[in-house]
Image 1 (cartoon, rainbow, N blue to C red):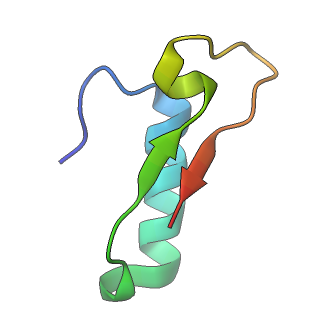
Image 2 (image 1 turned 90 degrees about the horizontal axis):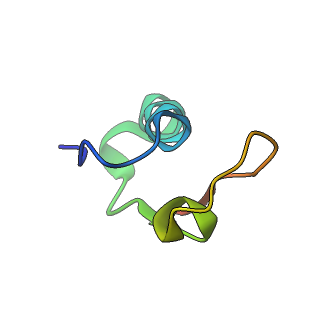
Image 3 (image 1 turned 135 degrees about the vertical axis):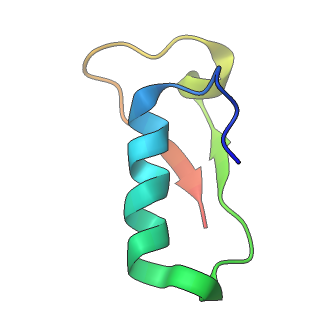
Length: 49
């Protein structure tokens, strides 16, 4: 389940990863500016799979 405070861009990245890797995923971790609240229009979304 995704936390409602997570930016839409991060949710989209999670969806792409889940569609590509399916049940082989152990975890998806969000870090960087998206977590710190500094996500800007041209920011990337940092995830660790």
